[in-house]
Length: 415
Ligand SMILES: Cc1cc2nc3c(=O)[nH]c(=O)nc-3n(C[C@H](O)[C@H](O)[C@H](O)COP(=O)(O)OP(=O)(O)OC[C@H]3O[C@@H](n4cnc5c(N)ncnc54)[C@H](O)[C@@H]3O)c2cc1C
Image (cartoon, rainbow, N blue to C red; front, side, top):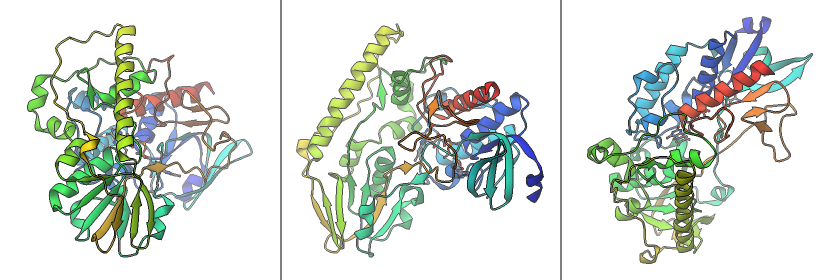
């Protein structure tokens, strides 16, 4: 590995996930020499950080990647963890990037006009840098977790794989995003032990609206245009187990399966867990928010003259009447036999290793169209960054990550 020290790369890509590999694809297309630096294993987030029964929330038509896009059917099915990993591996084999795995960057800084990466495998130097380390890469567990009794088995969702790893007894799942819902539902169905789902706040997206996947609408409302054709659901999709199983996983099915909803996880001290008493308000607020989003979508459809047929598929997606719930506010770890807490509380970014003046006052990278405004450092895979000029198709979803990598490479060529 010390051979890297002698070389000055035109570009170093940091992060060997889908975005980093897509950056390599676009760099190769432009004939720009580069290396991808990955701190663990290439594609490790999809190999190691998803539970066994994981499904994507984005359907296949929003997931295809350049170069291998003919290989994936343009349909409304959702890939499982194994499918997405092997498909991403195919993408990696196709791109065939030069990379260095298990390379831990202690510091990225500038010296004599070049960027230097001080790593456990020596010094790497480059003229330009692409950062593709994921939008949020550090699992976040709130500090309230620390004061809880040691008898409770606590872990983040990235360390949950299946219900077999849980201690016998009740489980509290904290966070009601798609991860929390999928995990709570699975544990309840497989163990039949008590499962509590703590709902913090809610800004829900429709799973499906006007027969189109909710993630597409999120992107559309964020300024993206329809570069690729939209795929609507049709009645046949309701016969497809893969699709039915996925779209029926929501908070209503949690309640119907016996998962108990609680308010926000407020406090954990020794044996006591306390939840806020505003569950009903949170659910009502979520329902109102959803209505507003749907009105915005209707407005967008009208404004952009998007033609959607009148025929609507009846998905029969039920919602919860919070007044029928009787949420608990306290749990006693011993008396209520609580053995596990799974924190589905998301991720935070970690840029502590970047020693460059490229951040705003809040510590976030200063970006325009996803690219750094200072230095020859370009970010990709940063989620919703509408680029109205290039009329990007999607803001999230793997296809969008590739578009974001393409933008970074184009900016890098101009810079
Ligand atoms: C639970 C969950 C569900 C998701 N579901 C979907 C979905 O349904 N559809 C969808 O499109 N997207 C989904 N996503 C988002 C998904 O993460 C992205 O689609 C995609 O993986 C982002 O790719 P990326 O390469 O930008 O980031 P990542 O996949 O996070 O890859 C970043 C890579 O950078 C490496 N890295 C981090 N820091 C450093 C460093 N300092 N030095 C070197 N390497 C570093 C990491 O080890 C990692 O390999 C989901 C994410 C999560 C967490």
